[in-house]
Image (cartoon, rainbow, N blue to C red; front, side, top):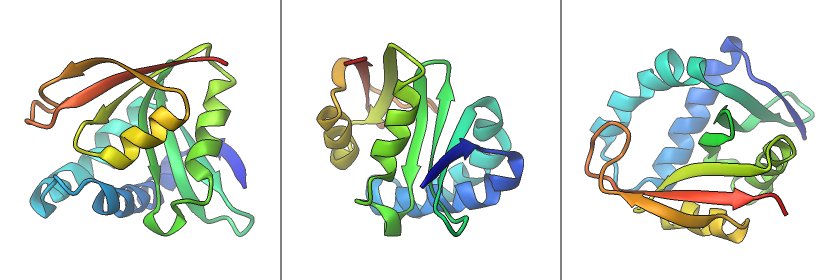
Length: 146
């Protein structure tokens, strides 16, 4: 697996990865809400972030991480690639660049919360609403370099 900088040419595949991952893990979101968010990913959120993609030897992108300074804004792995170490590899890549990593995780996504806690993140705060003002609580997490 290779980690490389994402480009706008990758956005269609990144949106597909996002959709696959969200449908597999964000059971609290309706299809309508997912459909509303989907165009925002490529048109608004990805262009604002430093994006790194995990690509296999055949060139297939299996996951990506989007960073705003030391904050993980997005970490998504295609549903069919979950459990293959892509998320761990992406986190390890960005942790080499920062002494402290921050992120927000949906409280209603226990798989993601457990994943981050397994890799040393701890909860440092909570918000009742997500970044779009929706009633999906967020846990604010922090991890210091080992």
